[in-house]
Length: 114
Image (cartoon, rainbow, N blue to C red; front, side, top):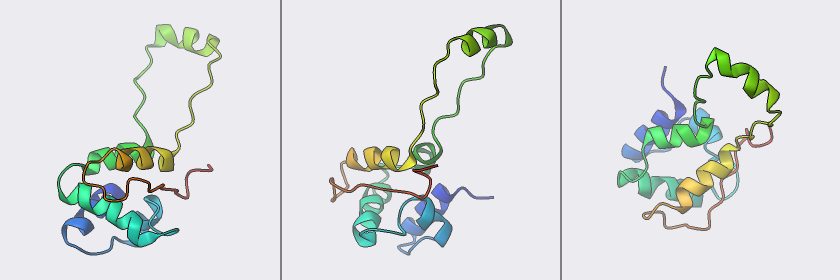
């Protein structure tokens, strides 16, 4: 099974629009679609942004495994986990990309409010 990040990168490298699943995951289904597509297109095509970076921005970093002896300390800490917002992470990734011609682009995804 392919990740939607791989689908997006493959479509960009083939100069075509990605499948609907990738469009929804990466915010290409709302707003100024052409501008958003170009914000992904140029950095990905230049090799500046990879499928792994897109995937990480979409799903967040995989948490480090917690050692069983430190699990109690983690549970006692009462720290609330930081909510991952994919649109914010993707926006930051794109705005920091040198080859992105649309630095002001803001990505919103269907997962941002979950």
